Length: 232
Image (cartoon, rainbow, N blue to C red; front, side):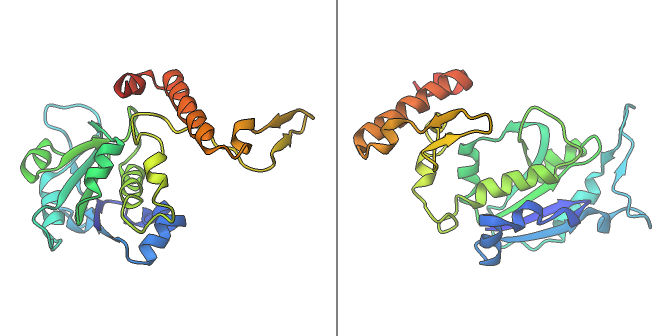
């Protein structure tokens, strides 16, 4: 996958995308990451990319001509290029959306700043609005890294154990079951002992699978009743 980031702060990349599993995928060319500095397409000597909103109000808005010129500077290889604008008012990002996006060979992500971008950018240039949650950040760069990591880890060969994709949270509208590791009996700093559930050390695979499914349902019902209703 080829990922192109349109941002006023290209120095924020690769950021988290340059580390661990995703960083290895980048080094091994499982995907490529390009940044386009919006200030290179600014309207004056200062490289200004924003202006005051029509109708008044606080903040500044990124200009449509700046975004268009930045987008046109990129040579795309695919007609099915996905264009994403990250904004709190967009469609909430889900695992299903990540799976769909991971099927594309090229994706361009516009990182907003200030009060966002001119609406004509969305309507004319064909950007899909996506939100990573119901909260506001200073810009779209961190959100872009969240979206890209979520997509890249779904590319075949990126994860060492592909089977984990089938069992993890949201794969079937259920939260993932609890995990435990050594020591089998953990004594905390207050002297309290905490044991791993006995079924997980029994070696009885059928009972373990049943326990995991029950715990997954229980956890979803408690923490995310909205998901539980979808799963039943």
